[in-house]
Length: 140
Image 1 (cartoon, helix red, strand yellow):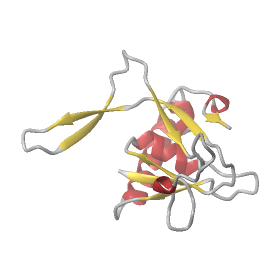
Image 2 (tube, rainbow, N blue to C red):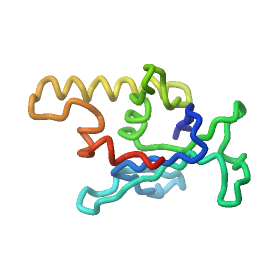
Image 3 (cartoon, helix red, strand yellow):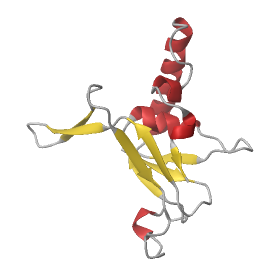
């Protein structure tokens, strides 16, 4: 589980990505999250809004440095957030999670690119690997 921190300035920001995770209880009482079956199309919505419907700040979803965040467990989604850059080339999102999270995401991206290099038919980037058009992922 990681926090995806939105570094931009928009007060109302949401992102919709295809795919979701299903929670399974283990016999020891712990939880395990697995991808939803591809036979049932699902989406995940990540809400980075700073204000609620009444125009009040949502402090529960703000970091100590006043950036909104959303919780993400889906590796493809974490990779997508990690790769987003603004027009000047700076990051749009920052991943904050347990030690080693960033390295796992970077390794996942590297493996995805290596797989794409070995298979010319495979999508070249994370978004294409998810089968979506970049224009369909953001809600202003």
